[in-house]
Length: 136
Image (cartoon, rainbow, N blue to C red; front, side):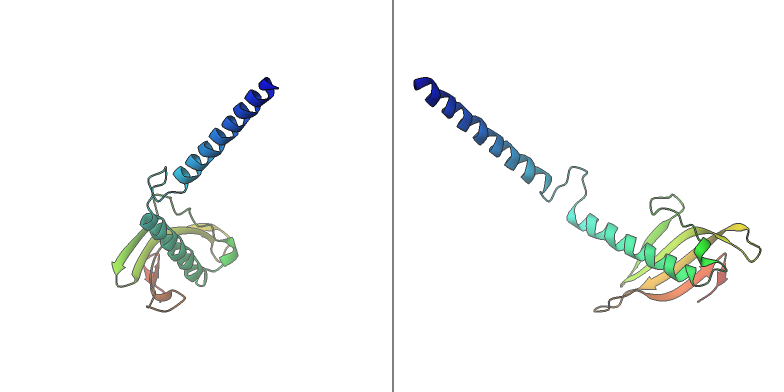
């Protein structure tokens, strides 16, 4: 009988320690300072940049001969530059490989400037250059 009480106490202690350890790990991984060093502000900025990059791709696709053939780089590609110009205005400089009128894939360099007005849902196209030629 005494051995059962000891085993039960040990089991309760082990379960309590595991619950405590799980809580520590949970709060560690869900704290504001992530393991990879990205703060909440940096995370929000990265999401904004991803949204801007996707919008620039949509605008560029409108002016391609074969938009369904478009192959854009990843946002992390060294050829992609996303810059804040202030007051909600952003500029994306990147490239897209797309078919021309003859079906040949050509690398097209573009610069797309977009703006998000306060209270607006979508990004407005302000300026678009593809291979140095102004499209908008």
